[in-house]
Image (cartoon, rainbow, N blue to C red; front, side, top):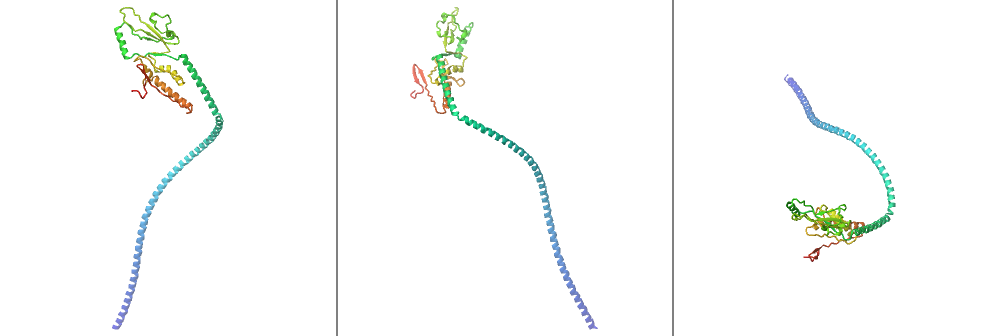
Length: 351
């Protein structure tokens, strides 16, 4: 019985070992399945992580794409606006092209007319030299006639002419006149100078008081200057004031300016330009106004400045008209008569 029990226990033990062995195998299989499931779980976790990362990247890409879409929409709107503007510009360009085409046609027409005019001018220029020579010849003849006529007028007016100029009262003289007025209140101090016109001249026989007057005062071609003796106190006797009349080729009163004097002397300067010898000089006592008449000042130029300007203007005109084939030279001398001695003021030997 013990053997049977032992054999039974052995059988059970073998069954148990078989069962344990089977359980071990199953446990090993389950362990392998668990490891496989763990690996699959880790793989799934990694896939989930990858999917989450891809999802975030996709979200960012989607946001970027939306932003690009927004910008693309703005660009599309701008392009549409630009397209509309381009259409308008194209229309304007088309109109401008049409206008340019019309202008080109007009220019071609004008060019054709200019070509015709050019041909006509070319024909006229063929005789230009001949006509220029003829005009220059006529101009030379007319200039020579002018010179002759001008010289004849100067000769008729007299080769020697005397002009007189009465200057205004200066300050010192004004004081003397006012003193006379205060001393002789009953007398009206009048100017001793009178400038009678042709109709105002006294042609009656001369009185004794005017017997010393020049006979030139009776020449109707002369200008008359009439002088009256200043008032003198004759101690109650009636005033006897002498009068003198002088005739001159020109008389300039106190109200005549430098322009009036130049108007009278310019023809003589023109005679010098025409090639004749001319002499102009001022004569008179100290303080009579010689320097002012000949030189003047900045506002009232005298005869010398005006004459020199006219000479150089004529020099320039002659050289221009001759096309630089003629040259005019001007020389200057400055002389002084002092104590009856002639002195050259421009000489290097002058002290």
